[in-house]
Length: 140
View 1 (cartoon, rainbow, N blue to C red):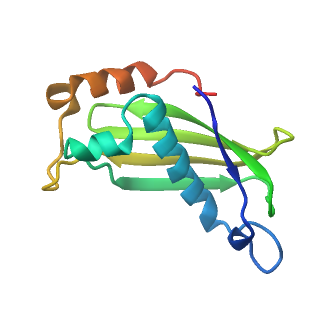
View 2: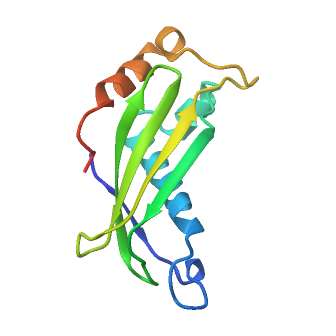
């Protein structure tokens, strides 16, 4: 799988010309949506099945700044999956391969009524894909 690339937009920078910290969380979401598409479970498919996947936790460690027009490559991996909770890990690098941010996001899977879905029973194919990816090396 390929890493996700985001080009820093002018509106994402602050008065000092540096990317505002809140944008890194948005980029994690963009990378997660791309990740789901790459594994064959895009968000449109999940929603058509009545599955939603809210964020339950988020964490960012900022390592270096980025500025307008920088390209940021985001590598994503499944750090942990125990059937109900999915923890994803993100490493963001600039074109010089310098790490600019590391982060994690945690998600659960709910039906349209807000009830937790047991993927292994209700969507075993999706469960199997996530289980296989758990603990493997980052997706590049």
